[in-house]
Image (cartoon, rainbow, N blue to C red):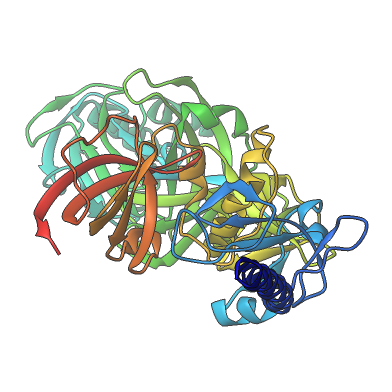
Length: 513
């Protein structure tokens, strides 16, 4: 009986061992059949089965500095890891799919040369041209018996009477001349009498009238020598005048001075002969041009500006002194300069950058030195060469891609490895180098809490272009946020750090969901 029981027990153990072995074999075959299709050649290289390209590593685009040697789900976010290919990792710049470029509306422009007039903008004021001023003076002692002009700043025409002067001293020499002429005196005596009248500033016209009419004249009418404005009127009716006294001053309007105020920082760039195109502040369609005639010495202590003066024509008398004008001061001859569309330049405040398209199609940021804007173009004084292609639109989306691949930090000397990103994040070049990162906030449910971080199923973050997702955020310290529990709905604030996104503040907003 005992032999039979022992035989049955032995048979049962053998059958169990056979079943276990069969299960192991079947399990091994099933595991081999369902294992990930990642080919690992004998050399150890990792090949992407979809593209056939060599893979350096996998990473989460939101945490680009964390590398993985296998594909799979990201431990930081609810998404698959993204491969970084060998033909991208060692090259300069980034590559963006041509279809994506077309969908984003990315346009390119060529760096070209353009004839430009170097110069700057300034503000000027019109003034009377003092070189055209005429003064009306008394040549002898007399009295103003009539004043035709009523007040200063009155417009006068050439030949218009200004004042009439009564000159008693003119009577005696004229009577003497008439007496000599009536007595048929010698011609030499008559010539001497005429010379005496000229010495007493009696006009030749009065002497001619004396010969013609035989009557002495004691009144002289002073007239305007040119068309213009009576800027000074220094006498009144009945006033006595002396020889050499200025009675009035007339300044013309056919030409004016434009006096330009130039900032002290540009003082060394100004020189006589530079062309100026000026427009009236109230009517930019009216253009007046000229050349700087002289640069006035001295910097104004109040405004810290240097003044330059030029002459502008005013044939229609549209301009009057004191008008404010916008002036563009340019070199006498245009020069050739490299230009790109102004929209292609990204200015961060510390530097100016353009995205350059290399010969192999990769996109790479380049630091440039910019000059003046000319219409829709910007001068490039350093950093580019003629014929290069630059991105004219969509460069901020490319900037986000480049920031994730650490291309821009390398410009400042940081040694970070290149990586690709499948989803561009709207991080700007300025924020990637700023000492204080911007903060973002949203609401979510706590899924897991560890010493290193907290996992949330959070709502969208429009500022980062994120939709609703599940993601782990780093804690500033292992003991941070001790009152937060799994299942709570919280409102949290975070920022981007070197190793991912770090929590700043977490506040409960309700119970468990």
